[in-house]
Image 1 (spheres, rainbow, N blue to C red):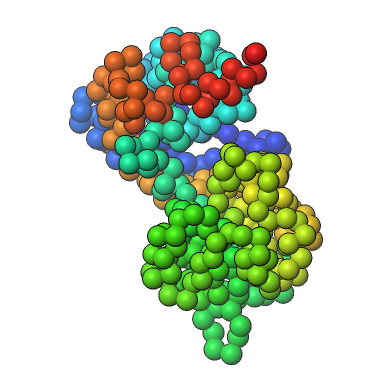
Image 2: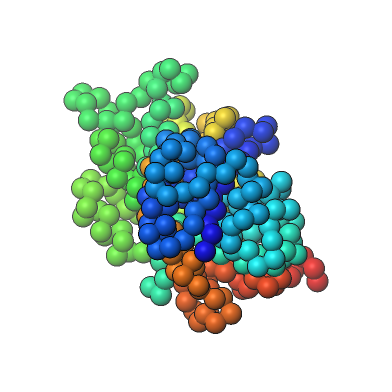
Length: 373
């Protein structure tokens, strides 16, 4: 199979580049080449992640000068982000797209993939039989880790704040951090905050066993059920509220943290929303996204950091982490995986957004069909 990786071109509303990761690393090229596949890499595709064209050549890739040539020749496009508008016209009938597709609320993009009969396999929906989402987990961990670093950075005087240290200093009260959610992102934020010596309170929904594990592993961290009373208690005097909780679809008309609750926080505190869901559990971040170029806005009297793709700024680490989990599946696809013959409960089929001009993923299909009733 011919496998192509192009340079990521996702931008924000002000046309600032917001994606620096690369879909295929030199190590991935070497492995796929050893298996007999041909790898095409657009020139400078890996530059922002620290990988030169020469490194890709040494690994066995062919460097091509344009994005259009990658799409014209490749049987599978192996990348990071959903295809951008200028890329839609490049797709060919039956071409495989392996990436984060995130088709919800991207009707026009999905329509173009359907029109061209693209076989779209979404990283975010590939699920193993034990219910894990292997291609989301490492990015969630990176997002949780960086989000806490960003929050601490904001508390310092050179960011215009009053200069609050995270902790671990005799005679000084440590920063208080509240983390919503104890999944992969939440635990990463907890680990970072705990290691920095902060006072940490974590709020969880129903996973008592995971909460017990968190408290045993990170001594001093307090885990509370996410009731309104506990949320208010946790927020009293908090310097950081870090939301790492995916808000259940069934609760999209409710909020966990109201804007008025933020008044309980320290006046110089910051709200970080890793989940950055437009209908999430924080009232103050509903409908809000910020960008890497302009990460902070003020709402309800508090600074808010609501950047959707946090892992992108750890471009080399995130590219390597992503390659670790995507490459085995890319190998399986390249070996001749056939969606028409695959079991409907197999991991790759669960990740199948579209194929043969039809929407396959049941959740995406319900959303898409509802727009065309």
